[in-house]
Length: 609
Image (tube, rainbow, N blue to C red; front, top):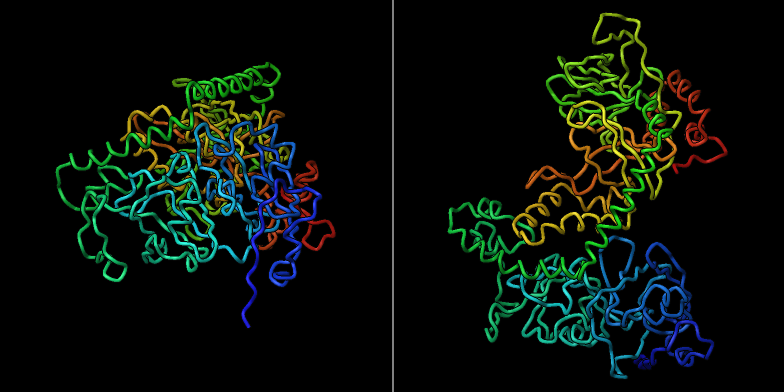
């Protein structure tokens, strides 16, 4: 017996009206597949997160409009709104008319707006009908075009390219052309386009039905020239691996430099072809940057950032804070890994020093420094040459703890130190900073003390960049280069190759704290202090480039409480109980540390703030 056809339901005017829903009137036809319409999802307005209870079928925008926060936060037309699906930073966006039935329970949405129209709204009554979830097919369209399409316009508003995918929904039985046209975010005339599967590069023509596209990702491919007859999916063949790649195809890859293109093709070609390709991309890229900062908004954003930074500088210019920071800074040392590199470290407690593991990359074997590698810790290295008034300690060959994943190393200093201006063994290691460890602040003022470029000790007041603002911060930094295409694309390629996406929300490093600082090379291992003089981070690395001058788009620090927990776990696992007891003694003075030193079988669970 065939299953009765399910009746569509007109979308409601809001998400929480008390009028009986026509969806429920037809419930007996599909209750086994979906049940009563009732679910919750979260919506983020800026830094505010609101829970929305949806009890009747509607679009996600209609559900969101049921909140008071929407009226306070959004003042633009519906067509200018962008709705991000999920928590992963800049991953995927849906149309404003996306069916609420396709939103998973407790799913997260982020709402924002653009100055220009992003997508057309639905006007035909038939298009406004809402169906149960199993009547829909969901698939993703990559915002980077496929073959012959990387530089062509396929979206109404190029600002959608700040996201990785557009999620498209369609009723089963619709064609791909119908789905993209109804979506509203694509240009009206896509022509004789095709979709290529991101995973296996199988081609789907626009006239095909969407039924087999569920949960797949595709790139849009436009014809090379209008009116040109396309090959079918049957006759189309992918290029062989050993076939040479044209320079023009290489250059079309997003963000690739001329030099890289030449190296990839292995040919010495006329570079005018490459520059012509780049010039074609220039207008699109520039428009994208200008859309992000229309009018004077970039200067306004820059002025606001300067104002906030000015307040931080003013805060750390207060004499009592300077005095406190200088005292804490006595525990910071310059580390000299002889004939290898220079960095920074600071005393944890007694004669133990914490720094970054990457300072010793390729010079560690079996938890020990390689033969011939010597590490010196210089305290009080503050006066420029020829003044010399610092104390020097050598480090023991065996590391107390070493972790590549969290990028930290703990050294033990030999007790015999000496002053630079006279021979003596009556020199003590400064007091440790372990007692001051605290959780990561999400926003606010902070300060780094270290030895950038192996020079004298310096202090840099910084402003913490919250997770949600990291990508915007990078784009703000690159905005001055929007008129110099080659520079902009080269910088993007460099920081992308170094894994900057790991730092963004949802990335493997999104748990770190981020900021901007002038302390680049040599400052790795510096302590990062909050406004109260407590250490919350180990300054670890940044994303630097060397042209037109040495700069960094963003820097980050590892949370010291995370490092401390790992240190304690490692001591316990390795059976170093004597040292663990010494650590516990120091931790008694700090409630955050005390939690982390409790035995695993303790009734109170360990937490990392």
